[in-house]
Amino acid sequence: SYSHHIIHKVFMENQACFQPLEEENSSNQWIFAVPVGYDQTLGVLYLEKAFEDREGLMPFLEQLSYFLTNLAQFMGSSFVLAQRMEAFIEKEREERHRLEQLHQLCQKQDEELQAVKQENQRLKEKLEGYETTLKSSQQALEARYGFHNIVGKSPKMQEVFSLLEKVADSNIPVLIYGKSGTGKELAAKAIHYHSSRRDGPLISENCGAIIESLLESELFGHVKGAFTGADRSQKGLFEIANGGTLFLDEIGEMSLNMQTKLLRVLQENKVRPLGSTQAIDINVRLIAATNKDLYQLVKENKFREDLYYRLNVFTIELPPLSERKEDIPLLVEYFLDKFAQKTGKEIKKISPHALDVLCRYSWPGNVRELENEISRLMVFADQEIRVDHLSPHIREEVGLEDGFMSAGLVEYDLKQARHEFEKQFIIRQLKRFQCNVSKTSKKLGITRQHLHRLIEFYKIPIQKLRNRSQ
Image 1: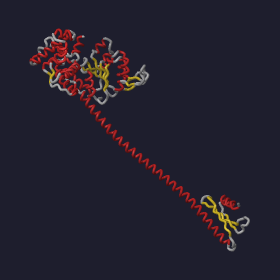
Image 2 (image 1 turned 180 degrees about the vertical axis):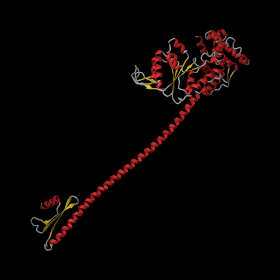
Image 3 (image 1 turned 90 degrees about the vertical axis):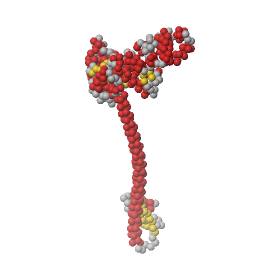
Image 4 (image 1 turned 45 degrees about the horizontal axis):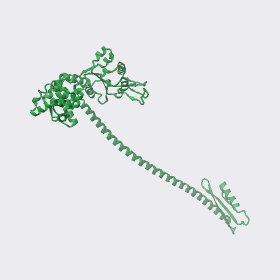
């Protein structure tokens, strides 16, 4: 229609239109079309009005056009303002939502931060506990392996203590000589825990207790696939002992091939794991021990001379127990206290004659054998260790078996002496017949049941007697 045409024209051209309606039967109709908008046309304000009286029409039309134009501008401005207000409100709503999310995020982060702080505090307290425990353990190790735990007041042991104190705080290699059971490892531990390396590891290995192929891997380590069965890489003892001390016992048992590899490590201060092309820097103090004469092995071409001189920088020789028998009473007292603390059983004393027998025995197993004997006596004795509690081979060597312990019987009353005589007589007859109960009971003139009761009453270690008679 014509009105739609006018509306479209006003909208597209953004120009107001005031004119008569050019349609049939509409001679008195006027069209008022004004664009509505601000920066751009948003719509059209359209009005049709019939006027009967044409007189004075023009002034009125001018006023109406003016009014409608202002109204359209106001409507456009209001519409734009409403749009902007709605956009502002929406933006504010979005900002508020973002602020709420940010607040929640900050609150969550604050909670997480508090949790982290609590966890850090817990870990700090735990670490402090570990440090306290580690320090206590370190102090316990230092106390356990202090020089005072190497018992002895004999001149030879005083000389050993002097050497240990002199060498402890240096980094030079130490070679410890001593027969089996003299305390070589204990001396090595005393050196380590009194040195500047006390906070580092102390690693020990017996070179005589492991075959050469395994010893090389044990000392130097290996990478995955280095040999059949090497399904994962493994650090060697040199690398594990880095910053600390490596104690190699029975160094004289090491093969010449292994000696060559050990010498290279000591010269270069580097170790290369089996199967690897990369050498690893190490900082390790070496303490070696042996019960063999290494210099004699060098003469016999069984030990490398250059390695011998590399190890033989500072030598400590531990005397066998047979050469420091004046220390046996101290050692006995020390081991009695040690096992009393360990087992809760206290042996108040040892009879003078039993102690004399221990001092007269040769102790081929040295301090270790004495320690094992005291451990055994803690089981057999009650309040006092007597001669009859001592191991049979000790009494035999000292010469008490043949005389039926006549020297020891003076310590007992008649009943104790009779029991001791009867016990030793039964033991002697059991040994005579290789612990055959039937033959022994026949010789003693008693029944087998009676002999079993006597064996149980006197706590005769018949199984040990059988083992020794075989």
